[in-house]
Length: 484
Image (cartoon, rainbow, N blue to C red; front, top):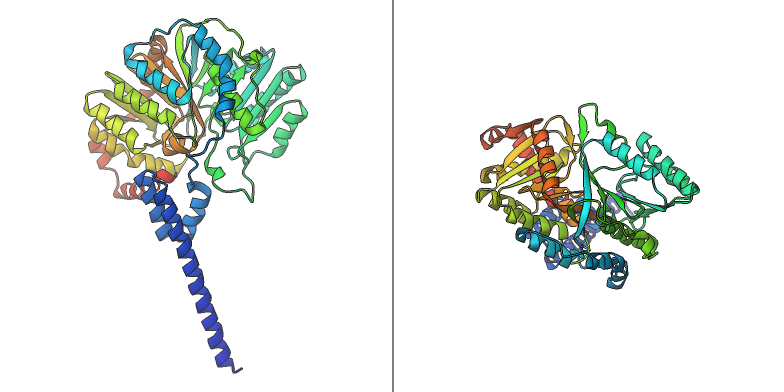
């Protein structure tokens, strides 16, 4: 065959292969778009995925396989299992006298009971920690007092000074006969050496990873992460909040402190934390633990009414997001929010704007500098929307604000793992404590106001004068906000 003819044939084969590849690729892209449309998602998220798939087809397809597939219609825990775990807490709940709940919050409490089986328990103590050091000291003290069991669930369990310190205490208690169970998130601890957790197992600690992500199953599981921070000691003492088990939560950064909020609870509300942990333990270990030993009678050490509320990316409802929408809508005087990331869903954004326009003192505090440039740009893109409605915006300048604290009307406050963003509301497994108590709310309000002194208040006029380059970058990144 002449050389010229061979070259023509090679060129023709290449053209056919290229055309076939393009046809197959766009057939897959079209099929994926049809699946997304038929899934009846939020139109904003649907359009975001369609734009990515059309303009970045290969990258978009890879991102969708890993991050975009919805599991909202699935259930990971059967109703029968849930019913078994709720027997002990339900008995304690029914045994207590009817809770004295102000009429303004009856609907919120009822909502959480209906969609989340979250039981409101009276008679709890609530102690807040706003620095990593004070929280770590309290945690180590309570761990040393453990007699029967310790349950730890953390998104990050770092192999550093703090992580090893907690690990060593857990190992010591396990060797002394205390049951110790640990759940860590597989993606949150991706860079942690496996040997770190093997040493725990060798010390007698029962350790499990949540939704392990490994090839060939490296699909959308990477997008559904357990962001919860739960520690339960002997069934009567619990910790919940924003702090993971890592040194940076104590030391901060070279450019500023790490500012966070964590709670220690004592009382029957710990049954809610215990239930959340044991449900996750069943998921990772397929062992159903329902013994009364894990739900001891604890009396009424305090006066706070507390609900432990969880949310997850499976099932029909977005429990924490729906509760916060109702809480914002019910606010009469003020609603204060601290969050490291502000990427609100459309219902959340509308609730904030509506409350502010109705005269409620709505204040939003985010860090001036965050740990993620991309998410911070996206957070900034939403500030004009709330400033125009009259929301007061504060940029925290002393360091990185990682606190997830909200307080309203000197009565309702909530602290937990939930950020004010799409990921927490729709993709992560989260947990928050909702506290109905004037004393706690006033303490949380004072924490917010103390932090406000370290902030720069941003006005709409000042915000609109920022450089056009910043505004353009924020607008571009905002297109991806439902995907972040």
